[in-house]
View 1 (spheres, one colour):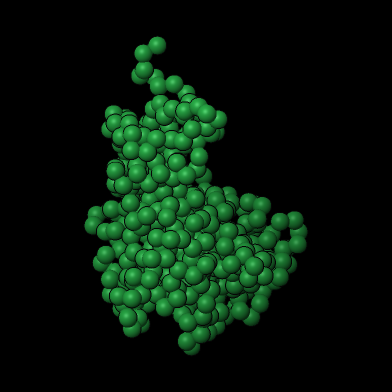
View 2 (view 1 turned 135 degrees about the vertical axis):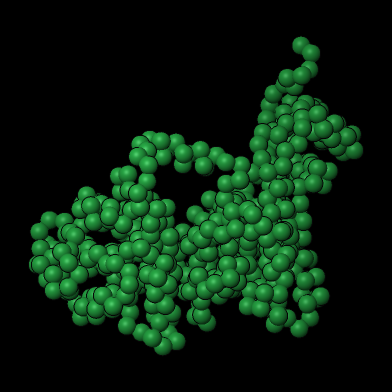
Amino acid sequence: MSFTVAIIGRPNVGKSTLFNRLVGKRLALVDDTPGVTRDRREGEGRIADLRFKVIDTAGLEDATDDSLEARMRAQTDRALDESDVALLLIDARAGLTPLDEHFAGWLRSRRTPTLLVANKCEGRGGEAGLLEAFALGLGEPIPVSAEHGEGMVDLYDALAPFAPERPADSPEDEDDEMSAEDDRPDRPLSLAIVGRPNTGKSTLVNRLLGEERMLTGPEAGITRDSIAVSWRFRGREIRLVDTAGLRRKARITERLEGLSAGDTLRAIRYAEIVVLLLDARTPMEKQDLTIARWIVEEGRALIIALNKWDLIEDPRATLAATKDRLETSLPQVRGVPLIPLSALTGEGLGKLLPAALKTFEVWNKRVGTGPLNRWLGEAEARHPPPMAGGRRIRLRYITQAKGRPPTFILFVSRPKDLPDSYLRYLTNDLRETFGFPGVPVRLIPRKGKNPYSSK
């Protein structure tokens, strides 16, 4: 991106709504509850041909102690230092507040240039607040409606001077370049970190990045929406996604927590590798297994990490008990990598990313049709399918339809009569024979003829 824009303002003025408008997607959670956003979120913003990186920040609070609000304020400070221009957003319908005036003075003392943006100016309800905004001493306010997309032309004109000079390429050319970028074999690998609340997901992301990028603390449920951060590991670009903790559905009583849970499930759906982070002191609880099954059902590559390993008194017994629970409760992904680590001290962290990259290769693996059908003949000879209605079920042919996850089509004379137990036998044997440890393997029976058989 050519330059960076930070959206600043007190809670509930519409910062996340404006962020979503600029990036063209509903990436940030939006709710009427003040203080929904806690971590800063980055995205690729665009107004017409103007492209930039945009940062959504937490609502500004006048706090400097060790509280959660003060830690949120520190994250906003870092976002402001990284930006070329800040947008101070106010609620024109609510009018100026003492907090708006306080932070306008704070921004005037900073080196980052600031543009004053008056949100919620649709209709005539924001006229009074728009006039009041002149008193902040930040120049003429830009009237917009983030919800309805009004005022984007004026915002374009105000941001354009901050864009560096660039060759005059048409927007169509840029779109072609972006689509070609998406098809690169070395495109960013999407890795999501999920788990129950307070297992240390944000601490793990900060340890991997080597900076306090995510908001952390002793409070459970600090992270509310999924935050993606670009990062490089051994020359490979990785898109790290920190997510909100997932509790059992019966325990979710607030609408905002329900939105956070939905955002985490979307992160799992769009990830390629998912690290399920467990608290090593209470590993593989029922909710952990539920999350693991969601990941497997979505066809994602799964890594299980045991965090807070530095607090375990008997590591060998804990590891053995966790492996046994995995074997009995999650047999559909036998061989899933199990990594003990401590996000706080960094112990065991060197094994996590190599295991993720290796699992990613397995998840993408393809097997030739010839070896597959030779294996099918041997598997059938060892254990023929049972008779159905006094007639034999014929296994005609197998081929791999796709990877990510490995998916195979098995052509059978009577697929509806093939027992699930026999499909599990074939799936497990296929996994062991061709080396698909720890990833979902899908074997789909279909009726059809062997296209290579003579007519």
